[in-house]
Image 1 (tube, rainbow, N blue to C red):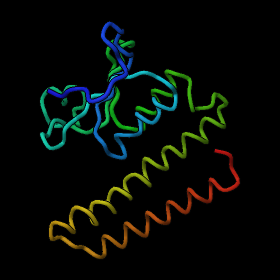
Image 2 (image 1 turned 135 degrees about the vertical axis):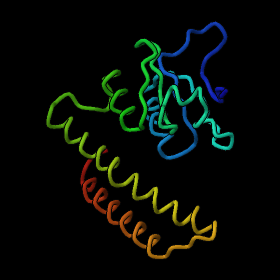
Image 3 (image 1 turned 90 degrees about the horizontal axis):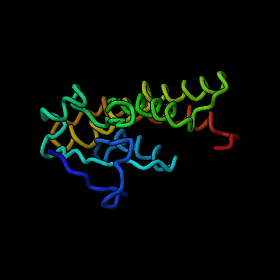
Image 4 (image 1 turned 90 degrees about the vertical axis):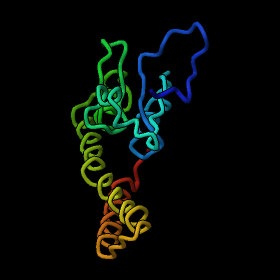
Length: 168
């Protein structure tokens, strides 16, 4: 089973409300960034891809899809949340952080989170896959690389335009 690779706990301290099961990936960092920025203590549990821990029986009980990240909220009956942006929404709601209460502002933030979920994340993931995994394993598909790199650039331009002249 996995072991914690980082924790702010000292012997005798109570367990934090949130345990985060993750690895060092873009999706894996999302809940960690949230918790760090919010100043919320958590237990960090490293999932070792080299050992295929994400596909192990114990982890599949946490996330049946065998993907990171996932959290367990011990203060809510060991409630499990999987999928990085669902975790962000859950944490924002639980801790009343980073998501405005005003409905228009809340949905403005939510639609940009979904822009990342449905656009930036998957497209940049495919660009990375075709450039850094497939190509290095002898499957160099220039059409796929160009398509995903160009679409990644376009999506980042949309985001950049949205952020122009905004305080963030």
